[in-house]
Length: 178
Image (tube, one colour):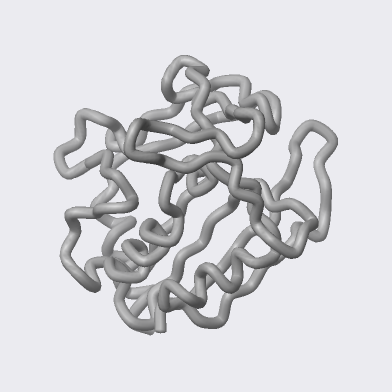
């Protein structure tokens, strides 16, 4: 399959020194080992998911974890992910997902900054010294509709079939670019 061939090619260029490992204590899941591409490697970019600079159809796979609840305009962010994925490409991610029919908006950006619609909620970012990051929304089951409106099909939410005592496992969301 074309996707697996591209993944093999991508993994073949990774060298042991290109990954950075850091032990930390995640507030959600306890002791953790964070693995990411080494910041010193050329090509690693930190971008606003609402306005990505990658060309259209650049990727076969996009993953992220615990990010989109912090994005001010998630619909624009989902549309950007769809734009940079090739047709048939996958997005695989987690967000805190509540057992509610509708997503609840907690905050939004207004002309003068953040407008809180509910009492502010924050998560900490272990990559930034546990700095608090504002939660803009609490996702409900309508996250599937949000992804479909952004151009994704075959949206699935998989709940882990097992549990671990020291880890809070989140449902994993899979969507295919159509």
